[in-house]
Each structure stands twice: as structure tokens, then as C-alpha cells.
Figure (cartoon, rainbow, N blue to C red):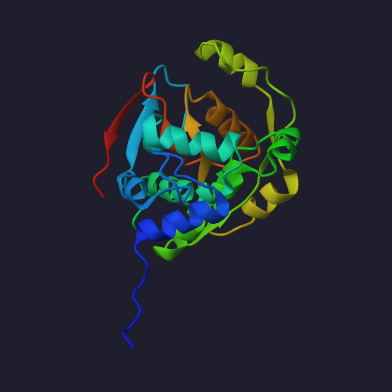
Length: 244
């Protein structure tokens, strides 16, 4: 009997679509939530970026690419439409961004997700940023980095909708909305050597959401070494590729 061969990707995708009714979040091709062609086209080089204007004191920031086209589609499908399978490719992109902030000496690293309101997490059925941050940690660990994920922050006040707000209005809207969690922070402070601390989020816009998380950690006595995000909005950022 002739040896059986693996089914072509197009056949597998067709079967997946028949069973699950899914389609690629980027191109709409029936099958996987991210088809092989679109996955292969995702960025693989970290970009150092800075909002314009940049929040004073914002830690160095890296992203995987611009918040447009494929990355925008993936973030929205994962966050707003509950396509949780996209946490894997988004986590891979977040790992790419984080890699641009890591030293070569394999120092311990702690990834801290930007917190979401509990009511929003319940409504969505999952915490998108936490989910992709955990995936990013697994990717970085596989590359030899000693990496952990720690939830050190919580939202204590609900900011009003940020749409239409300029940078200064966003700063005032977010200031004081995030606090650190005393017990987890104390455990990090007791760790020797102190890990490299990266704040993680999906999209970097004005930088004030990341800066508020950074502020809350610094008030608790921790040093934030960088901001890692999947994407940055194009109009507000200047970016350059990092050669590793």
C-alpha cells in the first residue's frame, strides 16, 4: 500500500473551515484563524519606537510593527472578537518586540502586562494582554532567556473613553488609574538579582497608558527597563529597526 502523505495546507484549511467555520483574521481565507501565508508575512525584526510627543521619562519602547493592516486585524480580532487562538501569533510578535529590549547576557526578565478592568475581562471572557504576554514568555524562554510573567498592577479607577483625546488629556485621564499590588511587588523586590522589568501591552499610541503602568511600578520601588508592545500607531511614532 502506498505511503500516506500529509494533507496539503489548503485541504487542511478547507476541513477546518467545514468543521469550525473559521477564516484567516487578516485575508479572510477559509480555514485557520491565521493562514500560513499571512503568518509568514508577519514582521520578525523589533523596532525601537517613541511617541511624538513622548511622555516624560517613558522607558525605551519596542514594537514588532505598525498598528495597521495585518497587525491591526489580529489585535482587534483577538481583543474585541474573542479569537483566543490569535494569542499565539500575537505573543510571538510581542516576544519579537521584547527581544529588542533584552541584553545579551541572559539576565532574568519579568514581563508585566498592562492591567485591564475586571468588568472588561469578564465581558470579553479573557484577558488579551495577559494571554499574549504568557505566550511571549514561553517564546523567550525557548530562546534561552530566564523569563517570568507577573501581574503586578491593577486598575483602581475607570478612565473615560480615550477616543478623541489629545496627549495631555490622555495623561490627565489616566493619572492615578493604576496601582501596584503590594504582595507580588514585595516578592519581586526581594528577588536577587533584580530582574529586568518590561511592561507589556498590545498597542502603543500616545504612550500614556504604558507610562501610567510604569509610574505605578516606580512608586512601589521597582525600576522599569522597557515597554514592549505588539504594534505602535503610525502617525504618532517614529521607529527604526534594531540590528541584533
